[in-house]
Amino acid sequence: MSKISIIMNCYNGSNYLMEALDSVLNQTYEDWELIFWDNQSTDDSKNIFDSYQDSRLKYYYAEKHTMLYEARNYATNKASGEFLAFLDVDDTWELDKLEKQLPLFDNEMVGLVYGNYVVRDEMTSSQHLMFDKILPSEWVVDSLLDDYVVGLLTIMVRRKAFDSLEKQFDSRFHIIGDFDFVLRISTHWKFDCIQESVANYRQHGNNESIKHRDKFIEESLTWYSEMRYHSEFSEKEEIYKKYNLFLYHDAILRKIEGNQIKTVFSILTMLPLGVLKLKLLIIIFLPKFLKNKLAYVK
Image (tube, rainbow, N blue to C red; front, side, top):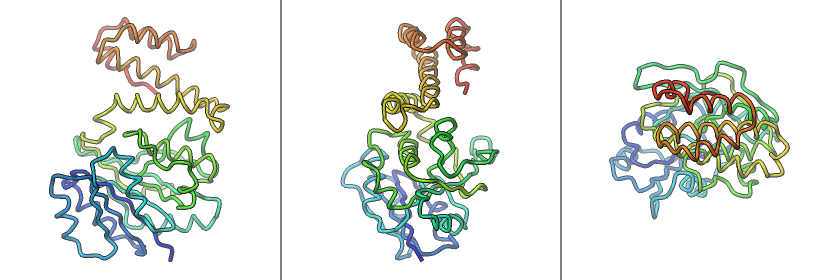
């Protein structure tokens, strides 16, 4: 059997760590190792990890605390598997995730396999399947630029594909590092997909993407402003549409939270004529309670 290296990055993740570890230990596919990268946690995470007795669990303590995607690179450097999978401490896997995904790599052109997942909202005690449509496979770069549907908690990536990148995870990013990573792989490798749920994403209000929406927009604008001149993306119409969408969201965030009106008008002049420009113009002059309702349209 081919060994899979599971990457689990942890920084003060004790609240949910046992559930995450149990979902790995109970996998129906058993030939794996887990690289547990402790990014200098100050809670009970290490004690929880040490309570598990399994030779496949490997603990590493960071020499210094780093940003998330730099930490992911450090963790993957310790991995020995032919395939890599990623699970954060507040998420879980379905028990047959690895067993279902591994056979799809029989096609040597497939560099990454992903799947659908369930969102469990702890604030409302509700859950739903993240995507209610057929997810794309084969050559997916255009589809992902138009509608990004790959959750890091669902992916398995061929180590050869991972190592083929000029850089793996971009350590500049704290929120969109997996988006950047997956898009760059998609330009050279085919993707395959498990259409049903393979994992569970816990939404608890303290998720990094929720806490740092401003950073998400800032990093997204950085990525799109760079990649629209990159040879592999520059001729794709989808990237310009997405760049304009994030300019719009940036303007909305500045207007609602910072009232940076000069910058907002500057962004308004950058947007091409169309729906987004009209909406932004309207929102600038709307009362605050209406601005909040219209803020984050797709």
